[in-house]
Length: 164
Image (cartoon, rainbow, N blue to C red; front, side, top):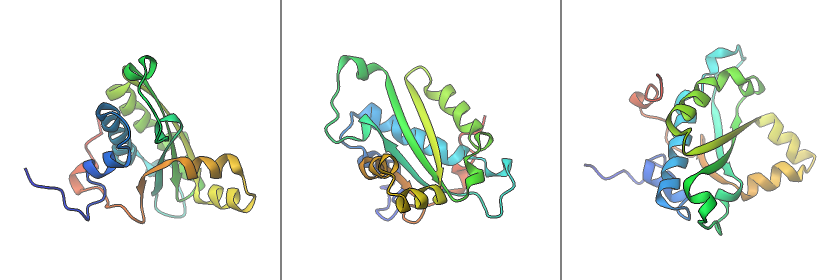
């Protein structure tokens, strides 16, 4: 088994380290969900003036807090909240995410609930201009699991991993 390259910042271990405050099983679930989102996003479902791209995947809510702790209620079942920032508003359409929802449900449905909210770059720009604290505070407090400008792209074989 080879050691992951340090510059491959989308290596599974690096993503799990971003949520290192969680127990190992929850780290693995968060990493798997982020990977499913990346592999199952289907921008071909809409006609947009630019290529489809996920810009950021952010874990928000209680599991993003560094002071999260394990209790009887959360140890067996997790309720994760992910915010996804896409390049164009058309990529927020539900049809682009249907496959991701299906794969998450099939692979993790009995262990966790996953909430996905999508925002476009324009939505974030407007939130900043209007000083929308609801959006800005959650982004600030969240954990960025993937950022297109920083993280390695998926390897060629990974795109088809999540397909049925």
